[in-house]
Amino acid sequence: MKPYVVPLYGGGIHGLDFIGTGTLIHYRDRHLMISCEHCFNKGGQHQLLVGTKEPFPINRDVLVSQPSGLEADNSVDFGVVALELSEVNRMQENSMFMPGFMMERNSELDCIDDYSVFGFPAHDNHVDCAELRLTANLIQIPLEKAKKFRNDLTKKRPSWYIPLAFDPQKIASTWKWDFKIPDPEGLSGGPIIRHLPGSYVTMAGMVFKHYNHRRRKALLGLRSSAILSQLDHWWPKIVSTAKD
Image (cartoon, rainbow, N blue to C red; front, side, top):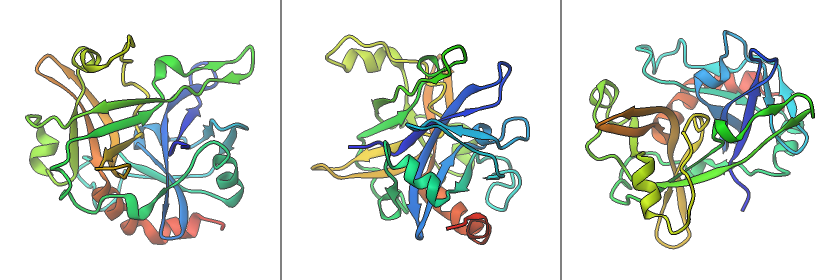
């Protein structure tokens, strides 16, 4: 099955750097790419290069979470760009779009604690300027909810966030093969997938932050319900920026 993600590159010290993961969704008859504000908004610039079979730039402004209504207290790290038909066609060669009906509207499924995160770890995705080559190494990591995780964000808006336990040593001990769990840098913007009985999945949220404290090792995600609320809030602007 094709993934719902693409690697993102942007301007950096060396001209072009890997910056994170973009998640592809199809919502209200529009093809969208969502990610974190800190991936989309590099120094105030919204110039992106999308790593597909034939990489292509997105040089127009994207909608990001500073400022807006939902995240007036700067507690949401989110951005979205409406895609043009030519961009959609290129992305669909190697990726697919998550249908909006598969994005969770509430947290009633939290009794099912079987997740995985998709994304492109930074240590394994880079720009080879000499060879004019971009790497696109995708990883899927199975995770469980961090039930005891608490911070200012989750205390203030518990319905907005979903924390996942991310202790590389504990994760590796449960795997049946020898594989080093990568640093999660680069997974920002990647989808949090909930695995339901059978082969069904839903999108529970999107990764935006990593905590690596001694007693608090976790990835924090913005729930799909909060994402959909923000998309609805922005919808007139999203529609006005889309050409198809």
